[in-house]
Image 1 (cartoon, rainbow, N blue to C red):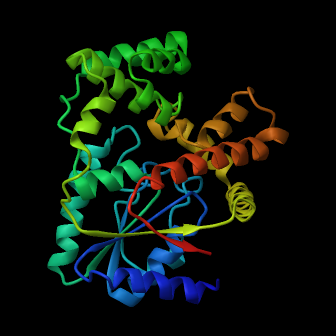
Image 2: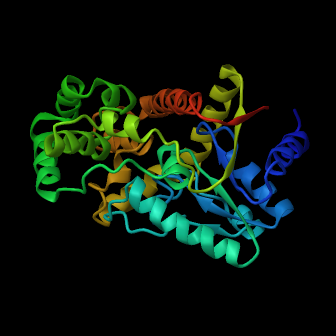
Length: 303
């Protein structure tokens, strides 16, 4: 399908409910940003980013932030707006994004949410389960345990008490693994039970959700080209600069790609193996994204 055909089909989905948010979701490397920008131009819209790495300042190349050309074509919100040391979870994101959506609508524009952090999309559209608030003492204890025993040990602990949450969370996702453990410690109930009870059944914002589907081989080729471009654009130097600025321990530094670049800079991964390691990790992440979306009401557009 040509890009023009893809945009045409996406416009048809968006037209099903002209008052709804348009949410362009899907796997890393599938072409979300390009489609969202094209939709914004045609619908008189503005883009609200929904990416747990792009939201941070300085994490530019490896997160695939919109290019200068894309930024000139459509106004973007929630991109590069948070200091890397500031923790952002789904609840905080949803609070911030709802304010942006309200402002966009107040100016007669159409909100277009774009990103691959699907839990954040769900938090914006459906709200979140009424689990207990954060407990900083518990979180600090989890961080200390992760440094002492490794993140995999915390994930193994989660698998014992909440296998459903453990299955959907990567062992390196310390923030979300810690949150799941925290909820169980505070309430005696698994986080997955709270979420199942909530069920994401009450819609806070009507949304037309759109995802681009690629054949596996085609998506792999797109991921490889994306990684090559990022490395050529200076991704390694970006990570060096962020670490020198004191952001080596930032949450975003543990995200896909940044984690592998850090391992290379620390001598734990050969530079000759870096590209393959990033591609492999990105493909695994993309599969997880598709799994999440298979349980959602999404209009799949086959590229």
